[in-house]
Length: 171
Ligand code: FES
Image (tube, rainbow, N blue to C red):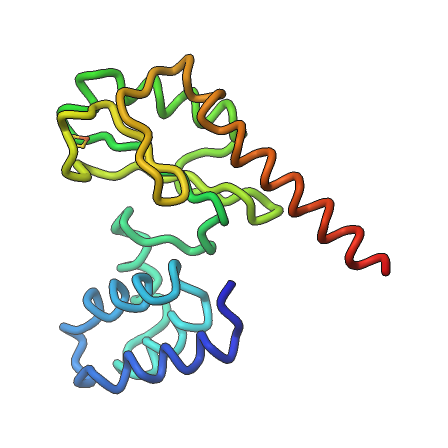
């Protein structure tokens, strides 16, 4: 997980590459999200100060586009492809199965930071449709029934890490 200091440095570096021009708002938001994985409130404020526009305006633009996230991604970030091929092959049902299994909606991250869920357009492997990506691993030809099975190793690893964390903090 990125620390606040690292986040501040990354933001300063990104801002250093841009002119203070309102036209740069969206590219700035995109680059910050690419670098940090989401748009922290503090970053939105700093972008507003940098471009000399109100934070309400920055917030309005950022929330208008559903490409932007305002919470960090989970350790096991899960992506459901909803491009045409995957959609036609049942992507919607797979997305619903993941929402049920993870108890998350699209764009959300679990409170313990384990899982997050997102939908994307085509990820470029339509022959394998429908496709789910969990922690950068592609799960091809997914079905709603295989969602639970695909999540098992990640859930087990996540529980193991949580236990390690708890026992570590007790010593
Ligand atoms: S539409 Fe899903 S990979 Fe292309």
